[in-house]
Length: 57
Image 1 (cartoon, rainbow, N blue to C red):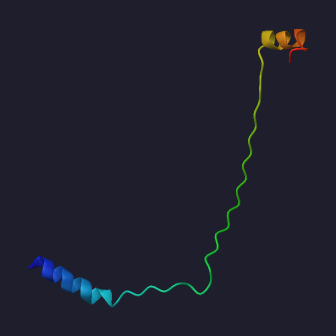
Image 2 (cartoon, rainbow, N blue to C red):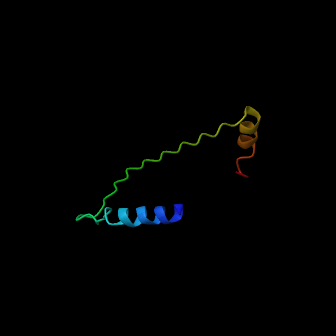
Image 3 (cartoon, rainbow, N blue to C red):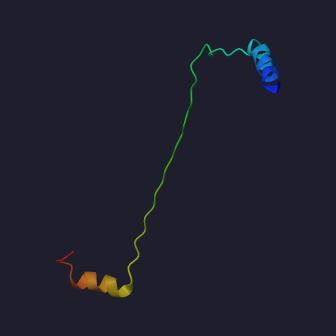
């Protein structure tokens, strides 16, 4: 019985809802700015090792 009432309500509401496509296309503007900063910090002993072996690096 409840199912019949629910179906009847759905049919009655079905005619009240209308969907229309817009006349103009939908435009989405995205302004994305990605900045990445990488900082390498060497310990004093590693820096000294690189200076001592500059031919390797």
